[in-house]
Length: 187
Image 1 (cartoon, helix red, strand yellow):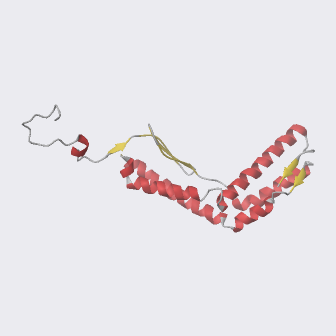
Image 2: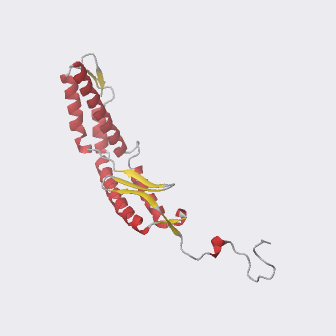
Image 3: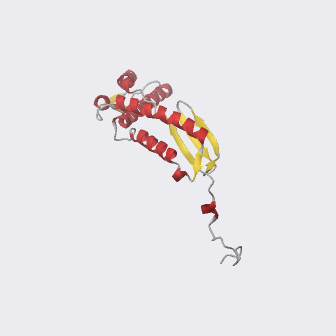
């Protein structure tokens, strides 16, 4: 028997957590950034969401490819087409990368609006019982799955980063040396 109970008490011992009929408490949020490019919601011990909108100009990939090739040729770099980058760009466009990006952007917009409301309402503790938070997590996971490296959108994102990196490195080399003689660029 617990020390706080006396033998004469007629009410059984019920833990305080069970006795409480009050609604779940709301977790205090310390950092909230929600805009068109980013959703970040943090409390003192947990990051509830941290996602940034992916920005890739899929329809501009052929143009970016042509710019990098032209820059490399103009600077005297040797060009190897071993990796068939031009064909890879066409393949991701044909595979539906543009449509996946539209779906991604639509889901990001929905997630942004939903988190704006969730911040107002609050995240209840324990969070595992917060069904709305769990639904938001599922939407976020679906959105992020669209950008996996095996998807057309993920491949387009990788190609875009690769081409921008080649362009920047090539421009830096040209600025430093005046040309790109002796360099081989793989496409």
